[in-house]
Image (cartoon, rainbow, N blue to C red):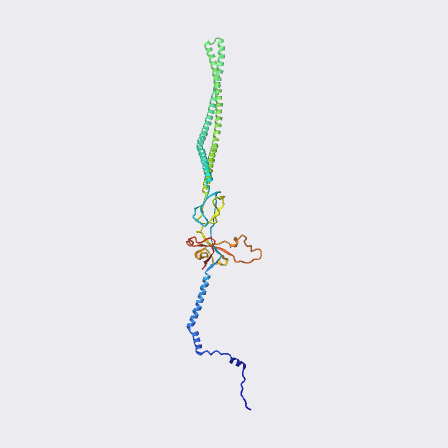
Length: 423
């Protein structure tokens, strides 16, 4: 029997044999690839690329970590309100909205007629009060001299009256002594006359001697009467001197009241001067009110929100317009509290303005004392209800460097993007 070697076909091998096969890679291609990867030049290039990427990453990391930025920022500035200080009728309006004015420019004029009349009346009242004060002042030195003279004269009168009383008493004492002496002499004369009467009756003495005794007795009696009359006169002089003393005392007491009258005169003079000063103050106020009829710009800036018109009746304190001083502006940047770790005054800043696309230089001036939420109408009360921690924002004031805001390009309220360089 003839044997035949028949190979059994493997289905797996048949399927592989039927698929398209890629041409085998040549040995030279493997060698070139291995040489390229293994060469030092390729390793150097790879190292340089990795190093450049690392350096770029470090530089980017340092750059983005060298500043803090926020888009929650705007330009701020002062808003000066212009209001009337006196009431009146507007006669002239010298400015329009958005007009730039210098400090001291007359903005609005109020009818000055009423205030001119008030000034004239106040000036007349002041002149009258000043004249009265001058007259009252003239009386002061005159009254002072008169008072001093009256006091001195009254004191001298009292001294003279006392001296007169003392002299009258001395004279009265002398008169009384003379009365005693005259009485004694009269008694002796009368006794002698009685003895001579007895002797003449007995014809023991001559008629002449008796007549002498009678005459001596009459003379002694007359002398006694005269001395007594003189003593009575001296007594009357004492009473008169005492009356003068009483009058002098009264005059002295009256003169002693003159200093009080002098004080009253001085007080009237001071009151008249005070009245004159008050009238002067009223005159000054009237002149000020007249000046206030011309309302001037308190600062240099742009007129905004004007509400006054010619013919309008103004009331004192009524707001007429606002002036925005463009020379004094700054940036209020609301940074997150997590951005303030290295924030401090004096740090340099760069301010990008959305309106014109320009960048301005500045620096941090100060950091607010509280977060913005604390100044809201209804500040949060974290002690009540469910507490949810929210990152707060703290206003930071950034001022422009000198010369950066020339040209009045910036306006309060413009949006800006500040960067503060913290490193």
